Amino acid sequence: MSLPPSQEDQVIDELLERYLGLMDEYAALRAALAGSHQRTLHALARARFTGDRGARFGPDQYDDRMRASRRVAVVGSQPASFSVVEEEAVEEEGGGTAAEGGAQDEEDAERKKRAAKNPLRWFGVLVPQALRDAQTEAVRTVEDVVPRLASVQAEMAHVEIEVRRARKRRAKAGKKQEATSNVGQAISTSS
Image (cartoon, rainbow, N blue to C red; front, side, top):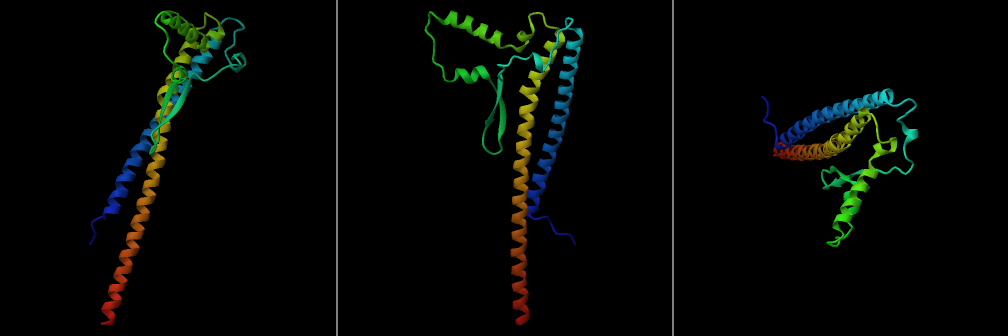
């Protein structure tokens, strides 16, 4: 005779089902990250091959003053969610508004500033299309795949904690039920 599952068992089953769904999504995102990384490296290799004679595209040619143009921001507390914030947006949060007459000049200066921050400019004006493809793929990876992957991983950790708590509650309830049944048996045998 099988007993119907207790409420704690149902909660644990639901949490484990949710965890398996997250694990599936995590595996798919890891595969997408690996594929994107492979496409980026392939495009970079094509850029090296098709570039001008003697032109190299590697870490030795990077500008030493390089800064991240995108940053990860943690949103929420439990479970944490991650999103990408562009560097310009972070810098503009503390700034004030411009005067009406200087608005056009400020827009021109902002366009020049954005153009100067484009890392492709470090390698000259006529860079191979494959290098642009590598940059596009890397940016897509950083903006789409990596934050989702980090968010899913954080949610998986949160669900693991919830499963442990539910199992602990179930164990306590089982011990309590066992203790009450032992007391009941002791009372019935003494009568």
